[in-house]
Every structure is written in structure tokens, then in C-alpha cells.
Amino acid sequence: MAGRALEGVRVLDLTRVVAGPFATAILADLGADVVKVERPATGDDYRYGPSRKGETSLSFQNTNRGKRSITLDVATPEGRELLLRLAERFDVLVENFRAGWLASRGLGPDVLAERNPRLVVASLSGFGATGPLAGSASYDIVAQAAGGLLAMTGPEDGPPVRGGGALADFVGGLYLAVGVLAALRDRDRTGRARSVDLSNQDAIFAVTDSAATIYAGLGVRSGRVGNQHPFTAPYDAFETRDGFVAIGTASNKLFRRLCDAIGRPELASDERFRSHRVRASNRRELNDLVAAWTRERSSAEVMRTLGPQGADLPCAPVAAPEDLLDDPQLVARGMIERVAHPRLGEIVFHGNPIRLSGAEPRVRSLAPELGEDNEAVYAEIGIGRDELTRLRAAGVI
Image: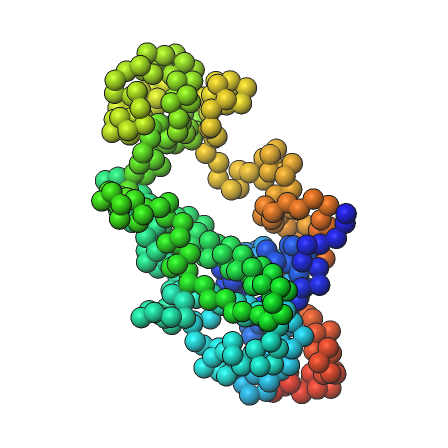
């Protein structure tokens, strides 16, 4: 059956930079009509990043694909009223200002609910809207530090290392999209919308691998173990003649298969390596044995021996994102989207990993130009071209 999962859902998107726009891009991918609200003249800060000279950044293109764009200064009295009028026609309003910023402009969830009781208001901020740090400034690295992930990441004898790719922002964006979907389902069931309050610190703490649970119950601290696993081995990225291959063996059965594959079956019965616990205790010695085998081979040779056509162990070459543009698995899964742009030529998007059977692609393929949909969207609330001209001259849009 054709169609889009979120067809008919309208999202007023006040987010900017990474986390919020990533969340609303997910909603657009699933068929929602996402209208991005940007500052007049300059727009989202993320428009100014890696790009050809004079063009909107490619990062902005990727995290704002499939949306429409209007301009509006919500800090002005006229802008505030225009936003309230628009909100009457939407299902969701998403924002990632500092907690309390919209409320200080008279646009908090309570005010928005008075204008539209069915409007889901979803907010993402560094530390959420409650607690002693509510309203404090944050960036990706701050959320990773405050949420516990930074302390867990990095080499055993080295400093904390930030997870790559603005991980906290993207994790926060994922949770924000899930929160919106849950709130919409609840609204359809009850007839009235809830607001969503998401903290990036909370989102990171939630994915720190049960570390706090284990410490509270057993007194075992998480610590840093690099690429390894605290409770089993081998589980690491091993150097080859021409790169690295990640190998994980989290069961005794897999470990025995690894030993056979590398020509060391006796290791499986060695008292140092007979169980998860002792393998973890002796991980350095065990890793050295595996590494001595991988270093003598190319990554392709290691994969032939250990991969699906060999021992069928969990393993993969360590690839940078730019090395994956022609990856057969990602291409087959539709994760490499190639879209023609009128000025930039072909743009490659990171696809949406959510696969729904029979679903049609999003309505719009590209990210919008700044304010390109002003006329169409504002016409819905009765604002014609002459009024748009006046509002533009006044700096409201």
C-alpha cells in the first residue's frame, strides 16, 4: 500500500543547527509537512558551513532535506502574533532554544495550547526545562561530558575522548523525534496534546550502557577501555597491513570459532581465556595474540577468513563515512541518496534508516532556500503579497 506514514501531519520547525533539525528531518522523511521557521535575512546558523563559495552549506542540506522554509522574527510583537496564528494550523511545534527562551517571549507551551489545544510542543535543550541547570548553555561536547559518555570514551590510559560526529546532538535528535511521535499518538487517543521536554544530558545518560545501574548494584566503575568491551574479549579494532578490522566475540561459541579460524584452536581451552570474565581480565594478552595474526594480513584477507564467507564472525573493516559512498550494503538499503540540485550538482544525503514497507519517498527531495515558502505558508493565515512586502521591510519576516 502506497503512501507516507506521517502524511497529513504538519510540523512548525523552530529548530536550528544540528539536534532539532535532525529530528524534524526524520519527520519529513516519514512524510510530515515540515515548515522551517528561520530568522529574516540570515536564517539558521547551519546554512553557513562546508559549502562552495556563496552557497548554503552541505550540512544544512542534509539535516533540512524535505522541508519548506519561511522567515519570521518571533521576538518582535508582530512576529509573536504571526507564530501564534500559524500554530493554530499545525500539529507539532518543535524548538531547541535554551530552556525558557520561548516562554520569555510569551510563547511557552501553555500559551500555545490556548491557541491550539491539539498542538504538540516539543522542546530540546542542553539540560531541559527543570532542575538546577535548566536554561544553561550546552553544546555536543558539554552534553557528552554531563551525560557520562565522555568519561567512558577513549583509551584506557589516556584522556576522555568525544564521540565523533556530534553524537550527543544526533542522539538528542533521535529521542526528540520519538517524543514527537509518542505525543502525537497520545493526542490522537485522548484528543489533547502533551508537551515534550527533552534534555540532551538526559539523552546521553540514557545510552551509557547501563553503567550507572552496574555501579549502583555491584560497585564496578565504568572506566575507559578504548574500543574494547569491559566484560568480554577480543572486542576491538585490530590493525591489518592496510587498515583496521573490528572484531567482536561476545560468546564462548564465537571465541572458539575465532581460535579455529586464526589457527590457534588451543586458545579456546586455555585457562586464561575459557570464559568471558577471564578473557576480559586478560584482554591485553589475548588482543596481542589476535593482533599478531591480523597484522600479517590485509583487511580483505582478514574478512575472507573471519567474515560471512569464512568463520562468519561479527566483523567489519573500519571505514570512514566518505569511504562508504559506494558501499554495496548501504546502497542496497537506500542509505546513499543522490539528489540533483540546480546549482550544486549532485548532493549525497545520508538516508533515513527507518524502512516502512510500501512507503513513498518524502514529497520534497532537497533542503529549502531561505524563505522560499513565505508566500504559500503565510497565505494560509490570510496574508497577501502587499502585507508580506510590508512585513519584510519592517524586518518581521
